[in-house]
Amino acid sequence: MTKDKSYDKTLHHLQVELVKLQRHVIARGQKVLIILEGRDGAGKDGTIKRIIEHLSPRDIRVVALSKPSDVEATQWYFQRYVNHLPAAGEIVLFNRSWYNRAGVEHVMGFCSDHDYHTFLRNVPVFESMLTDSGITVIKYYLDIDRKEQKKRLEARHDDPLKQWKISPIDEKALKHFDDYTKARNIMLRATDSATAPWMVVRANDKKTARLAVIADLITRVDYADATPHDTHTEIVCRFDETCLTNGMLAS
Figure (cartoon, rainbow, N blue to C red):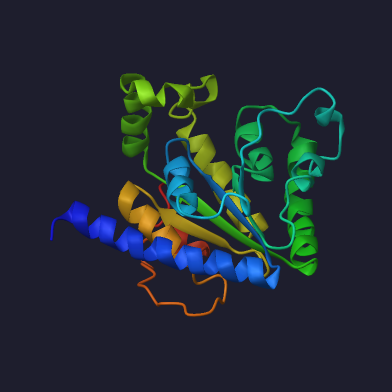
């Protein structure tokens, strides 16, 4: 079997499991929030596309907010995200989330140091409130190395179907690679918790990373008639300090 056929077959099996999972979430009135963060070009869009591809659009939403409006900028930081949290029977995927404050806003100087440090103190409390309210919070950080990021960002200029992904912030991603690495490490250390743990993903191989994320995701909800799949612990694992030195995260 070729590599592409193997990928397609595995993806199909995993997407069948996602359908089972969604049916369970709907039937039980569960609330599932999936957060995907990561470096620019790490494959968040492609991963989300494969997750939602065969799911009921009435019961799943993808949230990708633009920069806050003038009014939103004066509100409690988490306020505009709260409006998009899942109701009973819903799965919501955040393509970037409140963690913008710990990443691009901090690195690019879009927030004050006070706001940044306040966020790092408050977010574990906020996420604990979400889990206490019955929301299952699942967080993935997709990481790629400098060489792979350069390759993917340059490819956006050559592919007319990816032109919409180009932004001024992305253009500065490589220049600030080390700054994002430092911000990533601080964020993961400060905001990993037992109730809302970070799962880190080695995403240099896009297809392998997609399969690994979905294989991990279907273990996060205990649904009926689940078929076990390899969870690729060498690609996706729970964050701890060793991830910063063992190659799971780019340095």
